[in-house]
Length: 347
Image: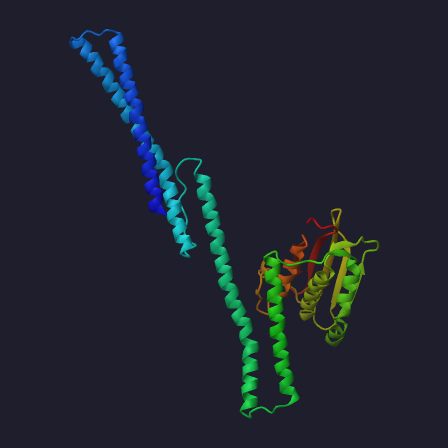
């Protein structure tokens, strides 16, 4: 690729030089005609004038060639750097960067290339991190499955309902993890299909809380719902919004101790055409250093007991609706996750 570019560039330079020489020849012809019209005598003075005119024209040709070559080099050098860097990017070296130099018109191209390379490098790092995280999350349930099955086959464990229930539970963990990864991938790649319909978000929140009543009673946690009256319906996918609330409520219950409270609030947004869903708990809270990363996939604090996908999925689903999600927390005093959704789709 670089060789072809250099060949074409040299051909272009040769064409420019040839054109310059042709134009200079025309100037020489015109000068000779001018000298003839001026009837310069063939004496030393006349020849001196002719030689001076020819030398000036030759200097003009030389200056034109030098300036053309310098201008070509200023443009060709950064383009050549970009082509070399593109080859390195194609080979997987995403840390490649190009120095900004050359004419002002070429520098935006260099900046755009560096921005692209930085984005590719960041995505490659995320891809590798994701593969490592997935392998780590899959390792535990697979190890339990393998150990239990091998123990049952070797006669170490009896083939009873208790061990079969353990196997079933671990397969359900794997199924949930795979489904969560699928949902997250579809949402982040903007391929998630939303079945939007006018939806009463307070009713969705009520149904989501109802599915956690038994778990909350067993944990000694009180569930509550506060819905602002007269909220207009929102054009959202009710199943996906319920999935968001399920993840948020499940996460809140996980970190709320006996005697605590998990409350869902539904209210109008600060701007017209918005609705807010808040999930508040009186749990252990989130440390200040962990708060900026709680929505990162597979990110888990030291005391986390989940897979690290719940909040990441919630964020992706909310963004797929054109909304926003944020977290506020004080360690030891609880956490509030706030979801802001538009009442109307912008699509």
